[in-house]
Structure formats: C-alpha cells, structure tokens
Length: 516
Image (tube, rainbow, N blue to C red; front, top):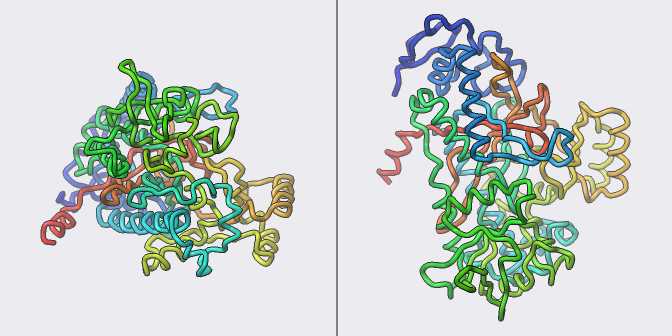
C-alpha cells in the first residue's frame, strides 16, 4: 500500500510518492475549489483529501491548464471517431451529440464497494423473486398483502400477456441498472430501479478505454478493478437462460429498434462486444413458434434475444398492431419455450416508482433480510393523507411520474415556479396513482473540470447487475454528472455527463476469498 505520510502543497492533503507541482505549472485545478455544504466525494469537511483520492489529486495538480485542455481534445477526438453519441430528444442544437465525459474520475474504495455490491445482489435477487412469483407463481406477495394487488394490476408496466411465460432460472431481470445516490451524510440510497432496458454500460466501457489513453499515468497509479470483461459476462448470462432445447452453443442476437434510437450506439457496441448479430425486427421471422434470423446462408435459429425494444412495440400480434419494429409471433415463441427474451416482458411492473416504495418489504418477504441499501423517503399519492401532506409541501419535494424515465416529467419543488407547482398539483389531483413524491436528496458532489479549474457538480451512480449462473455486479458503473451548476438532474437525456468510475482492488478482500 502507498505511504500516507508524505505531504504535498494543498493544506491537509496527504499523498503517496507523487511529484510535487511540476516546474512551470501555473495553476492548481483544485486551488479555488468550493465544496459547499454538500457531501463531497473527494474532500472531507475540513478540506482533507480522502485517502483513496490522494494519488488522483496529486497527479492532476501536476498538469497545466494547457495540458488538461490538450487531453480533453484527445478525449473528444476519440469519442467522435468511435461515434460515442447520445440523442437528446427535443434539443434545439441538434439530434445527436458526443457523450460528455469529465476527466476527474470517481474512485470507490474496496470496502465501500463491498457494501454496495451486497446491497445490489440482495435487491435484484428479491426483485427477480417477485417477478417470478407474479408471472409464473402463485402471487404470494400479493396474496399476503406485501404489495397491494390493485397497485400491481394498474401499473403501466404490468403485462397480462406475460402471465405463465416461463423464464429459465427465473431470471426475468437478466440485466439491471440500479440508480444510487449519496445523501448529505454520505450514505448510499437507491433512487430507482431500471429493470426493462437499462442503458449506459457502453459508456462505462468507453470511458475506461478513454481514461487509459488520455490519463494513463493517473489510471496506472491505482489498482483499479477492470470492467472490460462485461461483453463476455453478458454473453455468458444470456446463454445461461437459453431454452433447454437450445443445446450447448445457443445463438444470441441483439434486437434494436434501429439507427434512430437514442441508444443505438450502445446496441451496436454490445453486439460487437459479444460477437453476436445485431438485428432489427425485419431481420427476424417466426415459423411454427420458432424464431429465425435471415442470413445470406438462409434462415438461422435464434435461441436468446437481448431486446432493446420496449414491450408495446415488441410483437404487433400481441401489443401495438402498428409497430413496425417488432417481430410478429415473438411472444408466442417465448410462451412455447423456444426462445428467451431478455429482459423478460412485463418487468416494468417492478420498476414502477410506486412499487419501488415496497421493495424493502419484498426483500424482507422473499429473503428474510433487512435492505442493505435503503430507499429514499417516498410518499404514495394515492393515499389521501400522504397526498394532502405532499400538496402542503409541494415546494419542498420532488414529484415524479411513476412510469417515466430519463428525468422526464419530474418536478423539483425548490426550483419550480408557482405556475409549475400549480400545474403539478392539478395533475396529482387528477391522477394520484400516476405520481410519487420524495424528499429532496442533497446529492453528493464531485469536483468536475470547468475550463481550467474544478467546480462541484452533483453525481449519482448506476451500477449494472447481471443475473446469469451467478449474480454479478460490474465493478463501478456509470457515474452521471449534472453538468449545469446547481442542477440535480444527472440524466443523459437531460444533458448530463459522466465520469469513469474506479473501484479499487481490495487486497484484504482477495485474501478473504482465498481463505474461504
């Protein structure tokens, strides 16, 4: 382990053997940093650099503003060349933009990550139990009063068409993205669950590749756990849930809506990472309840489909008849046990933001455990007493529609106008089932490069969880950054950016694993 008693010029900062200010470096990117009243990821309340950030801070301070700008240009050139983009719908500046990545990485020590990892495995395991119970089992959680039956049946994500459709190993949610935040005390909380088509893993991998090229001397100074195995882990998980008749080498394909989808880059990226075909609905055909893809050598059977198409569009025979991007007969093929759709149809019921409030109870019900990662304080507006209390404090709370994602439809009370609050109150009164309210979480902040210096920006974290032969949490995840000063909205679709997330290898943990 690096020595921790060598001082550098920043007051209170200790570091390992990193050179002091390079000769001629005119600025300190952290010199005027104001951490404010928020929990800061890098600095303690007294301005001391947290131990796991000492190398990063020390090495960044040796770079001049010109050198940092040059490395930012290298990053942008690499992203443009790779086509790493994201669509912001309704953006007047254009349809597609390069995905912004800040060069100051987020670092998570090994002991902190172990708690996150345990909490994520626990949560996703319980959610899969709930989905299996709901669609394949006896609906025990509903019958025993853990979740109100009417709440489940009225969820926009509930699909009667998925009732009785068997999913191998009960892995209804094969790929999960769980959004975490840190409150003003530094405690991790679950903000929401993404169990349908969680996006962002491609940026995790590309951010890492960029950091190793653009700032190799910083990345190489720490024992960072790798993430580049994700493609092979995803492929193994998808093959694990193949139908029993698929044999030892099942065929996997990624189903995309097409090039105009906001996350098309990720769809193509993941297909390349796994070495499988990227297909659109028109490339697939169902015959006798078996799915085939058209190839230059004729029809080839497909056993597992990693779909990036939402439920209503996936099969025009069962759902929206006007869908031009789905596959006619796909649901019947899944019901016949001839193809596995990942993630399974109907997962949206479990990431409904009203059902979210009951997840700690589901963890206790299915696993007999207290939730390791707590929820944020949430109010259910279909309850008359809670609704009245929320309407009285609307300017102090965050209101969210239960079925939206990407930050759409959200109202942050403290920053809303009187007109916006009045409109939200009217919508709540008209349809209380469709909204929840939460206490404002003062998201932690992380130093972020703004021109030639660092400013605090709010961040969250989306780790990705795979449920194959075992439940695997990819080390780190996507740290999203609210790039606008003071903003709490980190979503990529709302103009947020990202950081590379480094989970440090924990030697003690490795020793424990060997011992056990």
